[in-house]
Length: 322
Ligand SMILES: Cc1cc2nc3c(=O)[nH]c(=O)nc-3n(C[C@H](O)[C@H](O)[C@H](O)COP(=O)(O)O)c2cc1C
Image (cartoon, rainbow, N blue to C red; front, side, top):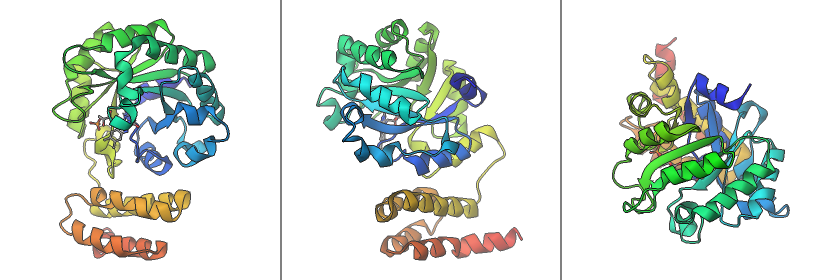
């Protein structure tokens, strides 16, 4: 099936999130209904250089049951995007996204990510090399502009249309805003009314209501959710089913599964990484911080799993449910 036909059936996607959207995170979101998830941004140089590619193994790892799956590339060496995109397609990715939005100094300060919003000709070369390299669709992810003096999202849309891009995601903040203030959904509506591309709206969707409101207000083709999906893959099922509300037991069991997936992909490092999720999974549960503190002290995989699965809350609810 065509990727966009697949997305249209349930047009809610997972945003690329550095430090988060690895296989375990993406897999859980897919199981809870998200139609597509992207890897976090991967450097064009690393992807284009075979001897360096193994360094990205944990970021680019996916299993066949996760498909369709997207990869996001970032960088500013236009010529490298050709080999990077080719490698990504050979690895089996179904769509290649290009990052023109990352505001953090390490990325934007070195001429990549959002700083390319200031250099449309270079961004165009990057897009051309990527599109030329692959048969799978290419998308771009942008912010509204560098600062509030000038928006560039319509210029980027036109450039993308002219160069064979299939989809455009807009996070309607400027680079200077970083993550502050509110994202300006009006820009998504304006983009949709001008664009021939598949338009994906992104920014500050934290609930089912937000997701449906973004669709309604902007008429975007799909909604992309980032931070609100961290430790909360349930948000996708909540969007699909108004009556769904995960029980505490389900949240604990999903945290345990997330932990197992992380451990099997990354071993001890995965165990340390899992700590940043537990609080989110247990949000709203009044013993969450005690539980997190107890988990922080544990160093053994089975100890952690037994603790989670035998938490009285998990057990009593299991008992309640028979
Ligand atoms: C921790 C973190 C990491 C991010 N990493 C990426 C990334 O690798 N690539 C990207 O395009 N955007 C990245 N973003 C931006 C998100 O994809 C998204 O555009 C932004 O968070 C707004 O959506 P949200 O309000 O649903 O989180 C990141 C954001 C956060 C908070």
